[in-house]
Image (cartoon, rainbow, N blue to C red; front, top):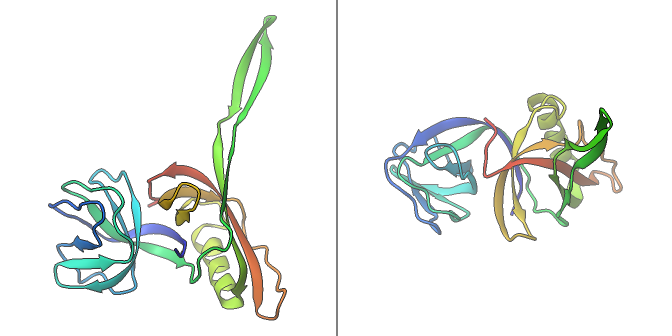
Length: 206
């Protein structure tokens, strides 16, 4: 799938019905604020269990059809929205990778008594790699990071496919870069690595 970086909510709607796992047609009270091609997210009524559903492929007056099926059933009051700002990558990654750091503990002494202190919790870092991307794609992503994420300082939502776990994930994340460090190997084309630290799985950064 094509990864997405997203921020903010537009046209968020809370629906009275429920949606079953595997559904690709999502009932929506008012579809006028959605258009074919819009990226869509869904959650439980309390904002938990967020999923990225890909793009709208068609719509009627009462429902939208999305490109990726709902993974977990959503109960009455589920919410649907499109991101206010986003950068949808036009190509899938060529080499995704995920690793977990165990955190940091140190031993300190107080009044001659040693005790352990955790100074960093475990965390997961994901790397999304593209072997070659057009310059226009890189420039658009760079602008998104600089303008909407304040050079990578602000958190965002990343929707991506985890090949190890098997499934599409929506996570709040911190990008581990302030701009895109790319250099063209072929005129107009360059490889790209996006590194981000997962803050919370199944969440969305408003």
